[in-house]
Length: 533
Image (cartoon, rainbow, N blue to C red; front, side, top):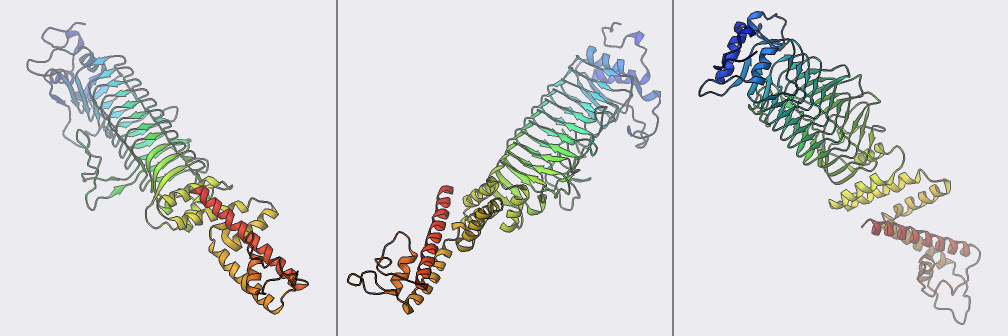
């Protein structure tokens, strides 16, 4: 088959009228529109059959893109096709396609095969496609698939997108392996916009890299019978991952308008919002996010064995502001966050939160989050006692200037630790708690000392002990004598000058023991405070 020098199609290709129109439009860079003028009949996702007047063979499309007949003088060749039914399999595997490609409102009879092909820009807008096979696809510009419906998955493994990847409002059903979109190892130089998409199966982004932001605003990911709806360990996003609401219909915030079309990220007043929803587990383990992970108003529906896993993530800010999961677990083990923005109603209860080794520097509660509730948050994350979550919380409160709350947290840690001790340790712990609150409330020691001193002084004023050496005894003073018994180490030359007997001996012993208990407890608490500082 040879092409005529004037750019016309070979005669043996026997173009239909629709194909001839497409061929000529390609040469002059205009749009070949095969719409019938009826919105219902022109819907590529509808039930109406499309006749031969709209059908173009995949081999003709491939010939245009791979061979690229000469453009008409003064024009730039481009494939702009609207409302066509592309029959057979469009196979461009390994090919280099230089012309601009934009297919709108088209139906594909069979899968679209693009592995290892190279495009400048590829746009498929509102198309019905059985499957997209595009592993190791390379584009110099954008790849757009907005509002498409794909029945058996999209494969973009190791693809390289030169600028933006746009998937807004795409509907993707799972393939034989249960995956809706498989994009492991994919690189997107700028934004990955997947707003208000519907994914039925596992969306896999393992080891993917996004040069600016990754937006899943308003999307619905559903994989209730699989392990995860979003599987993205080792994901790298240079700016922010958005799992937040998006505006619906007739709004500048709505994703119904697609770039280069642009999306405004500020909703207009009165706009109805659609939240991000994930039915199934989510895995972001070992991810790196340059600005933040935003989970505002996100909803997670999980089974008891599924997880929202954020193990070992690193990000300057985590905005955990979604709806509380009713089942499943939230796992933050080993995560590193500078600022944690959260609300009390977002965290799961006992057994639903794991955060061993979770490190953060600053807490920014959204709404009312009293310390008692914050302590329950720590307790929920530690079914078995672990000191690190309490110490992390105390350090964050201290950095915020809330020293009193920090001491309350450390006191709660000691009380929680006491539950793990043997009986003797528990008894000693209760005594320290009751007297001086493990040293975190040293003022109690002064009160107890004053009470015991007053009792001892009153007792010895009425029952003075005899002197040990009458000729050397100082002037009797019951107040100094009681104080000398209470204060360990300090010697007021009273305790050793008198010889109590009978009941006075027992009172003296009680005062001495009480003094040592109070002193050692205060010293232990002071040493803990100094170590924390």
